[in-house]
Length: 130
Image (cartoon, rainbow, N blue to C red; front, side, top):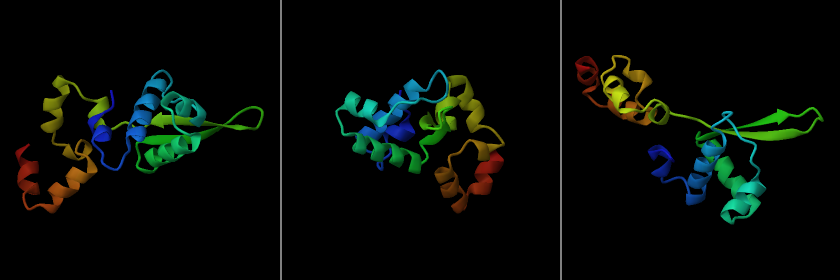
Protein backbone atom coordinates (compact mmCIF):
# COMPACT_ATOMS: atom_id res chain seq x y z
CA UNK A 1 0.00 0.00 0.00
CA UNK A 2 1.36 3.39 -0.98
CA UNK A 3 0.90 5.76 2.00
CA UNK A 4 -1.27 8.85 1.64
CA UNK A 5 1.65 11.28 1.95
CA UNK A 6 3.07 9.73 -1.25
CA UNK A 7 -0.22 9.08 -3.08
CA UNK A 8 -1.44 12.66 -2.77
CA UNK A 9 1.86 14.49 -3.21
CA UNK A 10 1.30 16.72 -6.25
CA UNK A 11 5.08 16.99 -6.85
CA UNK A 12 5.29 13.27 -7.69
CA UNK A 13 4.40 11.69 -11.03
CA UNK A 14 2.46 8.43 -11.31
CA UNK A 15 5.71 6.65 -12.16
CA UNK A 16 7.36 8.00 -9.00
CA UNK A 17 4.42 6.85 -6.87
CA UNK A 18 4.48 3.37 -8.41
CA UNK A 19 8.25 3.17 -7.96
CA UNK A 20 7.90 4.11 -4.30
CA UNK A 21 5.40 1.26 -3.84
CA UNK A 22 7.58 -1.22 -5.71
CA UNK A 23 10.72 -0.26 -3.76
CA UNK A 24 8.74 -0.61 -0.53
CA UNK A 25 7.58 -4.12 -1.44
CA UNK A 26 11.02 -5.24 -2.64
CA UNK A 27 12.73 -3.92 0.49
CA UNK A 28 10.35 -5.43 3.07
CA UNK A 29 12.61 -8.37 3.96
CA UNK A 30 15.98 -6.64 4.34
CA UNK A 31 15.00 -2.96 4.55
CA UNK A 32 16.48 -2.26 1.09
CA UNK A 33 16.54 -3.64 -2.44
CA UNK A 34 19.02 -3.78 -5.29
CA UNK A 35 16.53 -3.36 -8.17
CA UNK A 36 18.05 -1.70 -11.23
CA UNK A 37 16.66 1.01 -13.48
CA UNK A 38 16.43 -1.60 -16.25
CA UNK A 39 14.30 -3.87 -14.02
CA UNK A 40 11.84 -1.07 -13.22
CA UNK A 41 11.83 0.14 -16.85
CA UNK A 42 10.87 -3.30 -18.14
CA UNK A 43 8.29 -3.74 -15.38
CA UNK A 44 6.47 -0.47 -16.10
CA UNK A 45 7.28 0.09 -19.79
CA UNK A 46 9.54 3.15 -19.42
CA UNK A 47 13.09 3.93 -20.50
CA UNK A 48 15.83 3.33 -17.88
CA UNK A 49 16.70 7.07 -17.98
CA UNK A 50 13.10 7.96 -17.09
CA UNK A 51 13.28 5.57 -14.14
CA UNK A 52 16.61 7.06 -13.06
CA UNK A 53 15.11 10.56 -13.09
CA UNK A 54 12.09 9.37 -11.09
CA UNK A 55 14.24 7.59 -8.48
CA UNK A 56 16.45 10.66 -8.09
CA UNK A 57 13.33 12.79 -7.63
CA UNK A 58 12.06 10.45 -4.87
CA UNK A 59 15.46 10.71 -3.21
CA UNK A 60 15.55 14.51 -3.53
CA UNK A 61 12.17 14.87 -1.81
CA UNK A 62 13.10 12.46 1.00
CA UNK A 63 10.83 9.53 0.14
CA UNK A 64 13.64 7.05 -0.48
CA UNK A 65 17.32 6.75 0.35
CA UNK A 66 19.94 5.78 -2.21
CA UNK A 67 23.23 4.33 -1.02
CA UNK A 68 26.04 2.69 -2.95
CA UNK A 69 27.55 -0.47 -1.50
CA UNK A 70 31.10 -1.49 -2.33
CA UNK A 71 31.28 -5.10 -3.52
CA UNK A 72 34.33 -7.38 -2.96
CA UNK A 73 35.35 -7.00 -6.61
CA UNK A 74 35.61 -3.21 -6.18
CA UNK A 75 32.42 -2.34 -8.07
CA UNK A 76 29.48 -0.63 -6.46
CA UNK A 77 25.86 -1.68 -6.22
CA UNK A 78 22.97 0.71 -5.56
CA UNK A 79 20.74 0.07 -2.57
CA UNK A 80 17.28 1.63 -2.43
CA UNK A 81 15.28 1.94 0.77
CA UNK A 82 12.05 3.67 1.71
CA UNK A 83 12.22 6.43 4.31
CA UNK A 84 9.34 5.80 6.65
CA UNK A 85 7.32 8.45 8.45
CA UNK A 86 5.36 8.08 11.66
CA UNK A 87 2.19 7.95 9.57
CA UNK A 88 2.94 4.62 7.91
CA UNK A 89 5.08 2.80 10.46
CA UNK A 90 3.24 3.48 13.72
CA UNK A 91 -0.33 3.63 12.53
CA UNK A 92 -2.99 1.41 14.05
CA UNK A 93 -6.34 2.24 15.66
CA UNK A 94 -4.88 1.70 19.13
CA UNK A 95 -1.98 4.09 18.42
CA UNK A 96 -4.04 6.94 16.99
CA UNK A 97 -5.51 8.11 20.31
CA UNK A 98 -2.10 8.11 22.01
CA UNK A 99 -0.42 9.93 19.11
CA UNK A 100 -2.90 12.78 19.05
CA UNK A 101 -3.04 13.08 22.84
CA UNK A 102 0.69 12.93 23.52
CA UNK A 103 2.40 15.81 25.39
CA UNK A 104 5.40 15.07 23.18
CA UNK A 105 3.51 16.27 20.14
CA UNK A 106 6.69 17.50 18.42
CA UNK A 107 7.61 13.89 17.56
CA UNK A 108 4.36 13.13 15.79
CA UNK A 109 3.29 16.18 13.83
CA UNK A 110 4.84 16.34 10.36
CA UNK A 111 7.09 19.38 9.88
CA UNK A 112 4.75 21.22 7.52
CA UNK A 113 1.74 20.94 9.83
CA UNK A 114 3.87 21.77 12.87
CA UNK A 115 5.17 24.88 11.10
CA UNK A 116 1.63 26.00 10.28
CA UNK A 117 0.42 25.47 13.87
CA UNK A 118 3.43 27.19 15.44
CA UNK A 119 2.96 30.18 13.13
CA UNK A 120 -0.69 30.43 14.31
CA UNK A 121 -1.76 32.26 17.46
CA UNK A 122 -3.31 29.23 19.13
CA UNK A 123 -0.20 27.02 19.48
CA UNK A 124 0.04 27.36 23.28
CA UNK A 125 -3.67 26.70 23.74
CA UNK A 126 -3.48 23.61 21.52
CA UNK A 127 -0.35 22.29 23.21
CA UNK A 128 -1.61 22.87 26.76
CA UNK A 129 -4.96 21.23 26.04
CA UNK A 130 -3.39 17.89 25.15
